[in-house]
Length: 336
Image 1 (tube, rainbow, N blue to C red):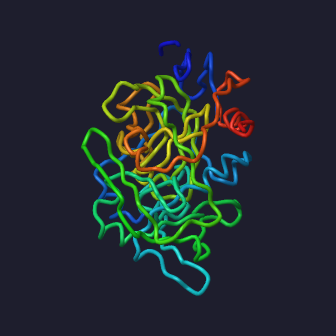
Image 2 (cartoon, helix red, strand yellow):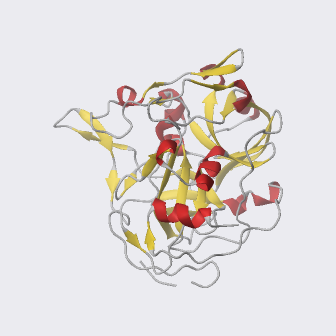
Image 3 (tube, one colour):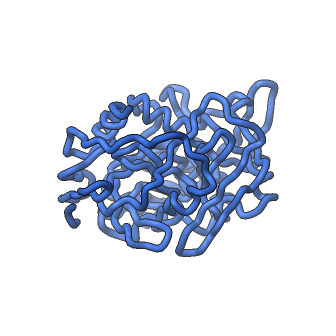
């Protein structure tokens, strides 16, 4: 990796399978037909698997950021029952034919894409997740699909008030190997979750530390750090080594220094490889600089349609030079 930090240009050195030492570091099935239907698929593990469930994360701000993300469910997969909304899920491991030691194998999966709240009634996601007004209207946007108590496992329902519908597909684009985004206006303003702040000052520099929050393979919310920008010189997107899968499409990708959204996870490497010796599938594993990388649409592509929420957080140099999610979380919690 190359060095350098002035303003938004980050200097770094190092690399490795998981431990990434930075001169300046920071912050920290799905229903199978639905995921397979999406053509742009971010999916692979770079280095070690950095994905964590919500109950494994102690940072209040990271949890709040996760609380402002949504799972996209097919409308047919959500049924209202009084004050609750029942979510249709299937066993992740069985659906994909995974090996017995695959992480999260026994959890339920049901989301086909991910998204984030960027306005009082605005959801940002990938363009290939919602391709038309009719597709938007058949989608439910669900807050709270995450495991906050390890003993309770995958939530089978959420309060009915955590489920929102599409009022309008405000805008979208899907340019193959270029930008890929959609902005959805919900049927009502969101209660109990704050809109996320987005970056409005350009593309993150090579080496910028990143965190992604979403629903890999349709699983309950996962937070993953230990990643950075590998290539910032692309048209409308950048390349990173995020641990993401098909259901992560539309996930918010956060700047590890500012805690603001830098982009939307849209496509990447193949999810799984086949273990012929054990007749099962395993997560595809690459080195941090290996494989094609994961493509992230620059939030600049859609920023003009998102209302400003006051001044952004100022740059703050982190105390730690070791990029782990714990270190990133401590940095984010210290932000104003």
